[in-house]
Image 1 (cartoon, helix red, strand yellow):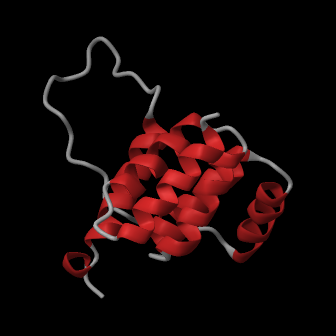
Image 2: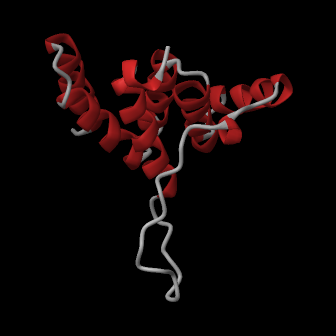
Length: 127
């Protein structure tokens, strides 16, 4: 399936990249012209051994590993369901960026059941 047929994947991939890059500042001498946005690539690939190790860490509460799996599945594997699952786990573990992304993602959905699910996440996370 080509990227034109996967607007949700493109949105998810771009937002995940932004989450992972948040907090990064340009050096004072950086050019004012923005570089083109990174495209999904092998940068998010995991070998079978790495996948096993990162999954183990994520299952045992490592938020960075959860976000790495979210990137791997959503960007490299184009499996949004698994990517969103791991991003939600990161949100459950307290990651504010993951929470903000998911709440925005579900609120912007055209599907009522996804907007409803976003409302449920909001109740769960914002008490």
